[in-house]
Image 1 (tube, one colour):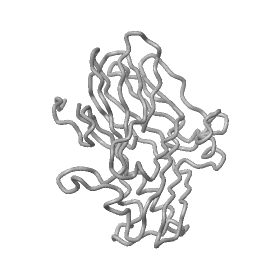
Image 2 (image 1 turned 135 degrees about the vertical axis):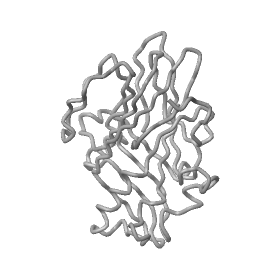
Image 3 (image 1 turned 180 degrees about the vertical axis):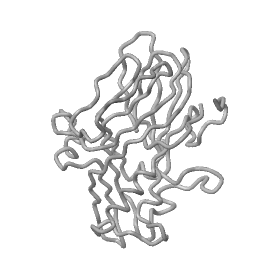
Length: 248
């Protein structure tokens, strides 16, 4: 499968309880995008910026959605509505809200299993991500997610800058979609990896370090966050996009 365009996306997807459904694994990886210039690097090996290290990263995922190829309907949701999540329908597989909670041990470039979704076999052509704050009611009994909801936060980044602890708390909305035509067949267990690249979070357009404690840097850091998440097919769980799929 080949993803086209730009998407910021993460994470658990709910099963629809169909005995004919197929499991699709979902995982995440934190580190520089892996390619010709970044093979083998990790979030620990390459700091987000000089003097900044990360200890924990949490993201509140309002919704993650896979859409079947046959669904041509427009999405009439009001994107500014932070309290309402769309009802489910037969042509989409969704989950949310859920929390991605990555510990220090997870922030080293390794593949971290997040969960599974079960879908009816078929052809999908779009993945959508919505990372944003949720209400306490939506968090329900999920205590870690409820903690973010009570803070009105969608992202919390804990770390150290020049040896001093910091906590960057934001209600930023990261909502993007990507065309992604791929087929899920019976007897297969495909996987999608979400790569979160923190190496540009705390750097401005001129390469200067941004202090996460400085309110004037907040907007730039949040814009960097929006550009830092990618998704790709990774059936062999090696952290790289598979190249054995058709390009259509």
